[in-house]
Length: 421
Ligand code: AMP
Ligand code: GLY
Image (tube, rainbow, N blue to C red; front, side):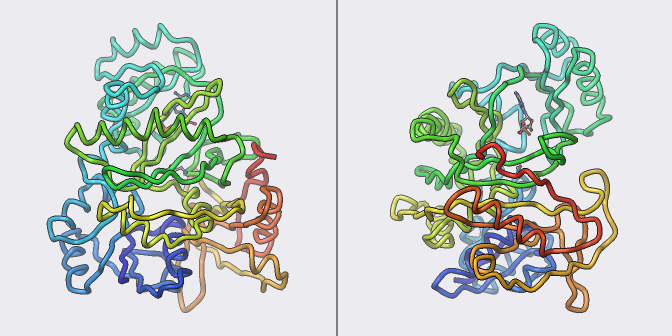
C-alpha cells in the first residue's frame, strides 16, 4: 500500500517502522516527518489539509494515518473523507473527546462512565464554591488543548483558586482556559489503555504505563512522557473486562447516539482506585511514548489493522500480540521540559551484542538531519526500546541501548518500569 503518516514524533516513526517491518512492501510518506523518518519513506511538506488531500489523491495514497491530536481536532479526517480518501482517525466532532475536557466530562457523566466527581463552569464563584467542598489535593483543568500542560494538581485550596483565576482570565492558557473543570483527586495507579475503533467494533491493545514526570521517582514537572512499558502485570483479565464493559462499549455506543461514531485510537487514561477503573481522560490518538512500545509488540500487520479500522471492517481481522514485554526509555534534550536546547550531534556506537541488535531499536522523535548527520533538535529526542521475555530483561536491554547513544545534554530517567519490578 501507499501510506501517508501525519506527524513528526517518535510515535509516527514507530508506526512507520512497524509498517516497514511487515512482510508486504509498503511505500511511506510523512507529513512533515523528522530527520529520521526519511529512512523509512519520503518526508513531504504540505501544511494545508486541502492541499494535502489533493496530494493524497494525486499520488494514489490508499491509507492516511493521523498521529497527533491537533490535525484531528482541526478536521483533517472530515476533509479527507469528503474527497473519498481512506483515513484512520476520528472526525472533528468525535475528536472533541480530547479537544474539550468539558465535552469529555459531560459525555462521561451522560453515559454513566465512572470518572472523578467534577464541576465545569466559567463562573469563578461556582468553581470556588465546589473547590471549598473538596479536600486537598484538588485537580484544576483547562477545557481546551494545552499541549499536556492544562492540568494543575493543587496542594491547597488557595493554590486551586489561584489556578482557577489564572485560567479564567486567559493568563495561563488563553482561550483554552475560558471554561474550567475542578475535580476530586483520585489516588491510585495510572494506566494508558488503547482501543483501535472503527465506529462499531474495537480491538483493545495491551495496557501500558507511562512516566509523566521528568525525574526519577516521579518527581519534578510533567512532561509528555519519559518512558513506558507494556504489557503491565498490574492489569489482570478482570480489569481488562471492566474497562471494556464500563468504558469502551458505552463510549462507542454513546458516540453513535451523539451522531459522532468514534473511529480511530481511543486512548483511555485510567486511574485504578481499589481495583476499579476510573476514567481520568480520553485522548483520540496514540500516547507518545506508549505507541513506541506497543507497535513492536504487535505481530500481525498494523497497516491492515489501521486500514480495516478506517473502512469499518475491524470485525474481519484478528490482531496478534507478541508474548514479549517492551520497555521504552525516552532520551530528552538538556533543557526539556523547560525550554528548547541547541542542536547537538547524535553519535551512536556500533551495536556488537547479538541480543542488543535483535531485541532493541530506536524510535527517533526530535531529530533533524543536515548533510547526512543526525542532530538532537530539542524536546524528546528519541526512545530506546528493549524487548524481552520479562520486563526486567526488556528494561536491561533498553538501558544498554541508551548507553550506546550520545549527544550533549542527553537526559533520561533511570527507573522506567519500576512499578512492575
Ligand atoms: P490529564 O491531562 O487529564 O490526563 O491529566 C494529566 C495528569 O494529571 C494525569 O495523567 C494524572 O496523572 C493527573 N490527573 C488528572 N486528573 C486527575 C485526578 N482527578 N486525580 C488524580 N490525578 C489526576
Ligand atoms: N504519553 C502520554 C500522552 O501521549 O499523552
